[in-house]
Image 1: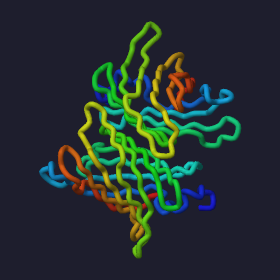
Image 2: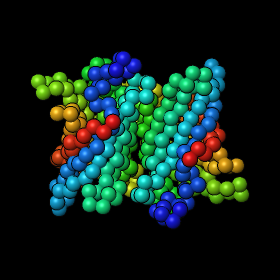
Image 3: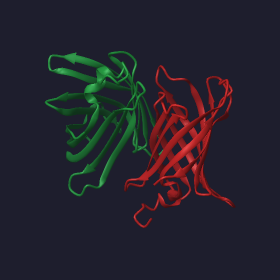
Image 4: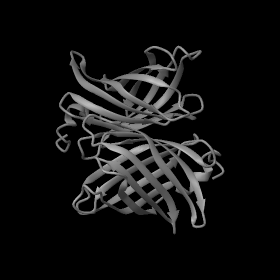
Length: 161
Length: 161
């Protein structure tokens, strides 16, 4: 903790590697689905947190989604995030650290989403990350493929390192 | 190689982890600078290549730049790339595999660049990646902070795995 850049400290509760299961769904999908996921938040010495996520199918462990990017705190409560998504998206988010009676959480909201020619359209992406009871919890909702903002993914992951 | 998705095979010469030194410069910088860098291109089972780069100062090994993203081949010669840069950028590139008498190389050109509020402006980013004499060579030029397209970074990295 003492070695962390000052800007990273308020977000230090997220640092580590987290692994577990999540549930996904969307109005355009016939049924909800379960997935395995590993997320890492790591500080490498600059006032930036490197973020990676990979997910897999719970039945046969085939690879599903990957994302990676960088969280850039700009104050004790504010941050910018740049993210690339293997499905062909890039995203810029702004967010903030919110303190509540149950602990801190981070809220992110997309400001810009860019697509490759072959990617499905995502118009907006909102996320909440928290640690509760020792688990990394997150929820992600999106407006995509013509749908209004709706829940898409949520997971509770155990710390593995 | 047999396990690689068909779309990834033409780009398989890039796969692996590469480490070495590069040289950077730009019209707005007083002097050129040397940097250490490690780049990984990895296929994780989908027809996508995960890309990561981290660099450090050669004098004291302090961390410099980080980037990560995904190369998405769309044919035997064409690809899309999504990239996030720790300095606060996201980029979408289109590119192609070019075969010449000295071997293959990949050319990428930015189509979209998004910035966080605090990032320096980069207007365009062109890259060439090749493997020559067992080394990963790349050159990157950019139009940024009001300058026209000019060389910025180049490196020759040895395969470490």
